[in-house]
Structures are given as structure tokens and as C-alpha cells.
Image 1 (cartoon, rainbow, N blue to C red):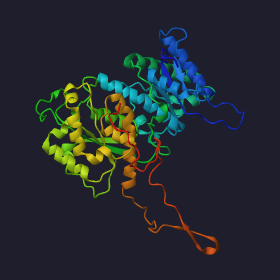
Image 2 (tube, rainbow, N blue to C red):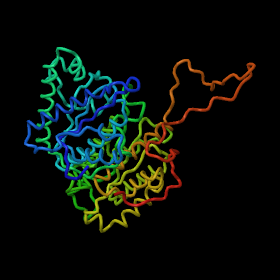
Image 3 (tube, rainbow, N blue to C red):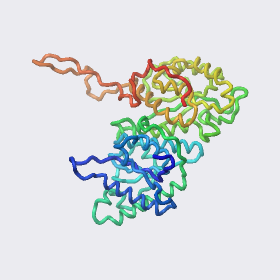
Image 4 (cartoon, one colour):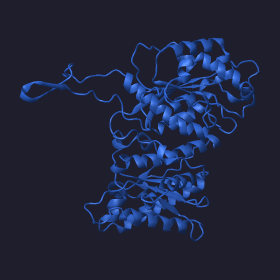
Length: 448
């Protein structure tokens, strides 16, 4: 896709498999919806003839360079339009598209300090609220304005059932108007395309997209407030608490904890946040973990002797389900002048945490240079923490479950070999082995 092409909206949907070879393409109804939306958007805007009113990912999935073109469309489109259906939320590909767009909107929201809500969902098939993953459930969107039949039957029902042509036209026209209004209000800025192949799914790991209790993750910030800064440190990066630390000021208008929280929520987690100063002393490595955690650390925090001592004590406790992220703004002149000294002191304070885990975790602990890189590396750090949590969490057996491992009976009633134990956690979705250590990885340095 040429850099000059900026589709007005991106239609994201899940493929419906054909019934038998040579049968009709069930996605032809989605194509009709796409053409109708493009027609309405062209009529409602001043887009010139030949402009890209929309983009539908189905057009390129089988061709060369589809990942690059898909990434380019997600990086430049103004509005993201997911077609809700049970199949949609079971699709890893759709979850990747959602997260890639959400990451871009979160970045712009941090820069402008205004919500960049540019996702306009459409009901292809109605989905019960209990089956919606967190990112979809949190959308503030009123489907009732598109018509009663639209809510009960979805666009698929309206387009397939005889007698509902008028309701279909109304729903599509209202959807097009909503797309145009959001595009003109939010004005999402194009960004550099991400590598779609390594983007995580916004709906969680494969096989765990919907249903069941929501996953949880805790974010802790180790930073000073403006009231207890080291001598000579500028207060412009700090607020009244550690949670208000904004290392990427002035590019970002939002504290890094809240940017991280939004990113984590779009990985289908429920999040909680706290200050390391308030929580220090409450850690107990002898107890099994209750959730994975991310510790966001300001290198300047080690300038305070008491905080440095508590961080060092924390580092000596074995908690591999807690990963460290160190935001670092090279355009902060004070930080840049003391970079080597502060980096060395932090490594001396947290030698275990700074060197544990996979390459992405070590890169995050050695300095994340900007918000764009934070959005790319944080999902990998979160997934590594989640896998370590699953490895170390306490297992609760159902009532009546035998504690002895079952054995298969071999021929003639003799005992066969024992059943192999199940995998401790899902396969590593970011490539490579998943032993949690990656001892052969050696790359270090600022992530950027």
C-alpha cells in the first residue's frame, strides 16, 4: 500500500469457512456491507474520486506482502470498524488487528491528553455481553440508535432475511454517519506501521478469548513524587504521587502508569495500580502469586537511600512473575547527563531483575526510549510475566480429584508408562523457547 493512501475506515471481520469445495462464498455478504459503507462514506464526505473510502483485509490475505499492507492500513486508517460475532472474538487475527489499532489510539491519547476513541463497532451477529472480551466490553457504544431489528438480528440477519431491506439500509447509513463523525472528531494521526506478525491479540491467548473470569495484572510504580525529589532534579516530570510520574514529558501529556494500564487492558486484562513506596514490605515470596505484575522503575528512584534499600531487598526475593520496565527519555537533559551513573546504580540495586527473563524483558529493564517502543515491548513483558505466574501459582484441584497421578493400563492388565505431565503454560507466542530464562540471549541496551 502506498504511503499516500489513507483509508477512511478499516473493516475488521472474521472469515466464515465455506461449506464444501466450490460452494458459495459466505463472506460475499460482508463484501456487500463493505461496498455499501464505502458508498455512504463517499456521499457524506468530500473525499475525491478514487480515494480510499475503506479497507477490507480480506482483499490481500492470500497475496504477497499482505502483512506489510495490513500493517500500513492499520497505521493510517481513521476509524476501526470491527464486525462483532462469536467467530470474531475467537479469531487471533482479528485480535491482532484490534490491538494494533488500539495501541495507536492510546499513543495519540497520551500525546493529546484527550481520549482517542476511534473504534466504531458493528453487530454482524449479536453477541451476549458475557461473551465479550474486556476491550470490547469497555467500549461506550449505543447500538440501539441503529434500529431494534439491528440489535436483535445484527447486520447479517437484516441482509439475509426477506422483508428487512429497509432496516438494513437504515442501519448501514447510521453506521456510515457514525464512522464519519468519529473520523472528523478524533482525527487520528498516521503512525509508522508495526510488524503485524508479532502483534499480540487484544482478546488474550489462543483458546481463551471469551468466557471465564477475566485475567488480572498489577502495575506498580517505583518513582518519587514532586515533594521528595533528589537535589537538583526538575519537578516537571513528577506529580503528587508516584503514579503521576511522566518520564516522556513533554511529548506525552499522561503519566506512564496510565499509558501502561491502557495497553494492558487492551490485552484483555483487568488492571490495578499502586506505588512501590506504599506496597514495599507487603511482598511475601513464600506465598504463591495471585497475579502477574509489572514494576515500572524511574532510575532516579535509586537516588533515595531508603527507596534503594527497599528495591534491593525486593530484588533478593524470588518473584519471577514480576517483570521490570524502565522508561527512559533521552531528551530529558538531566537524565541524559547522569545516564551512565543512574544506570549503573540501578543495575547494582536490581541485579537479578535487570538480567532475568527473555530478551524483551531485559531490554525493557535496560531502558525504553519512547512511548512507541513501550507499546511494542510491553505486551511481550506482560506475556512473560503471565507465563511465570502460571508456572508458580497455586493449583487448586477440584473436589474429589485424586492426588495420585493416573496411570494407563498396558496389555494384559499390566501397568503401562505414566501419563506425561501437561505443559505448565501455553507455548511462547513471541517465538523461541519459553523456559522463562532465555539464558542464551545476550542482547542488551536501550529498547527503541
